[in-house]
Figure 1 (tube, rainbow, N blue to C red):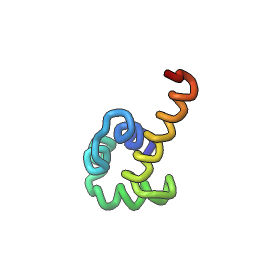
Figure 2 (cartoon, rainbow, N blue to C red):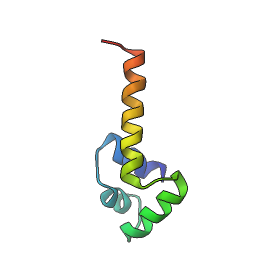
Figure 3 (spheres, rainbow, N blue to C red):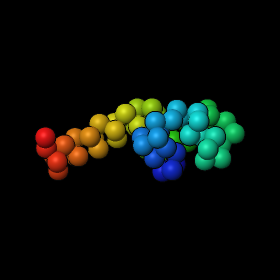
Figure 4 (cartoon, one colour):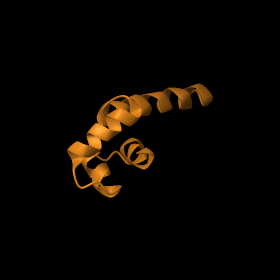
Length: 63
């Protein structure tokens, strides 16, 4: 799950593509298990984490 999340956040791949890359045959099953594991759907979590990392980076290295 963490590897799939990394792929979505840093490599900007879709949830379906991430699911296949980490060994799932069914993107639907992956999405269900991802939601249970992280508490929200894959795309929502990827968006949330991208925003969080951007905010953290800006606070460390302001322009």
